[in-house]
Image 1 (cartoon, each protein chain N blue to C red):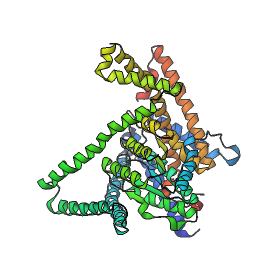
Image 2: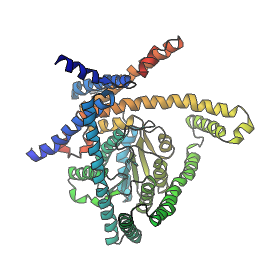
Image 3: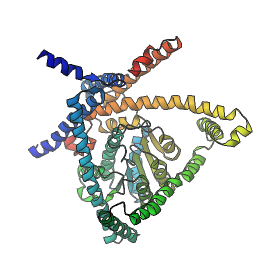
Image 4: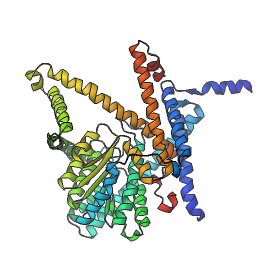
Length: 216
Length: 278
């Protein structure tokens, strides 16, 4: 294997190993040198994240420009995005993000649009609930009853129908639901340790984007 | 000299409240490493197949039949990228799990001759995802079929990203939607958007708050630690498969400690509870 390929494979593995061990040790051990090294590593992360913003903008512009250039369906939306991105960036750099007009546009355009997308969740939850709560078999029946009890707990009509309904719904949440959730969380915690060990030791290499031959 | 050593040693101490976590992590780590090192091809553990992973080929096959693309997203990863996670999520480990599935998906899509679109909510993942997909196409001998413009970063803002993905899913009429990673509130938005265009959906997230949404909408779901096992299963590497046996034995150990703790608590002793708080 050429030396450059060996370097491309081995150097990231060594960096992963060193930083992985450092981060784990820093989590549990109080030692000034260790904490200093960990703090430096975290500063590198901030620097890398800064560069990543540039990569993100380039990727975004490249993809959007390609759609404009090839006149794909709705290309004018991509053109609008490029124009808006350029205007906002230049305006933000020249007038700073504290400029009242800049802030006005952000708080009266970006924020309401964001909240609107989040608001769609309410309708999607209702639509997903209707589909998943159909009484098809015993399992679906148990889920339907549990969901009905929890819903009745959370609306005033539940207590109006029967004063004990909220308590029953609370029991479903606090005991069977919580017990199952904690079982899953314990499995996740152990799984995370296993992924961490595999990654630090260089067995898990999916993130390195090595070709099939190099993975072996 | 001795005095200096003593002063140095006094500065080294375990952080109170994290000692038991460290001990657990080290013990579980040793168990996993033991099975990583000792598992060979002739003593492979019997691992349950995950329907969600088996369904990936079916989903890609559907995409080929319909002539529509396959979509992959690891979710809005901006907050999880540098954290240990929360709400049952494993943070950066979830992203690694997602990237392992992407690696397999890219090879499968390239083999079948379909098109893969990857949408991202963190700019940091753009080079990694791009290289993973490129290598998938190269491994299938179809390097020319890789299109860099199909690795799409929309925004690091959660709902701007979500809006971008939902729009793309509708415009491209995706045939298969694969979502594995650390999802937050965008999980149901993506799943419903893909449901509305009739996609076959394979989803997985360790987040206990988002799993119910996937279960309600998607065809196949990887729950909790299954996401972390996915990378090992897809690699078919004996050592990685051995690590799954290590995690199972660790679970038995944890359950045993839980049972002892419950028994002692019922008898009026809080020894285990106090030890776990150290």
